Length: 247
Image (cartoon, rainbow, N blue to C red):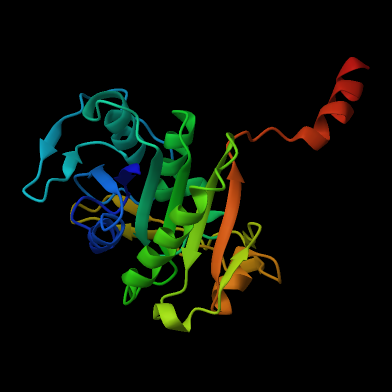
């Protein structure tokens, strides 16, 4: 299978290298990734600056843009023919619940879906980063299954893998997104010139994290696979909204 691979941790990230090494054992991989860490970039596009591509000694393509830029460039300019799949990751840290709104890892997969291609986002649910190879093997397993069970046209897969050895995984659970509490307050500080500056505080703690959620699966040693819809329409509200707007 011909696969376009990207991430949001940057072209030199360990997770990307291990994912490429693992998947390339069975598939034809082209890597197009940001030249720096773009965590939290979400679906941003670089509309006000030119994009530049550099071919690395590793064979990877480095781009001075966002994860979405990388996937768009990979499909529209770098590859002669469309890939059959877009894979984003392995992110160093979880993308659970509300995280998917801000995640550059998920955004790269979403951009692939917007370009008409099936896509997977994968994250190692730990900041320690000890077992990227576990997440890589899970993705390889999922790719094998997708070849006989293609994704629906309006979905991507968001995969979160516990940071444990592959043989210790309890299995794979299909999950829904959980939800976090409101984020912690921003930090206020002063720069060396006495100007006030702010840093984002920690993400909110888990609020909706019961059985069936992505949080619960990972906390209990399972790989979480959440199908995400690209169409964000709240269909359950359409009829009610038509009614009150007509009054």
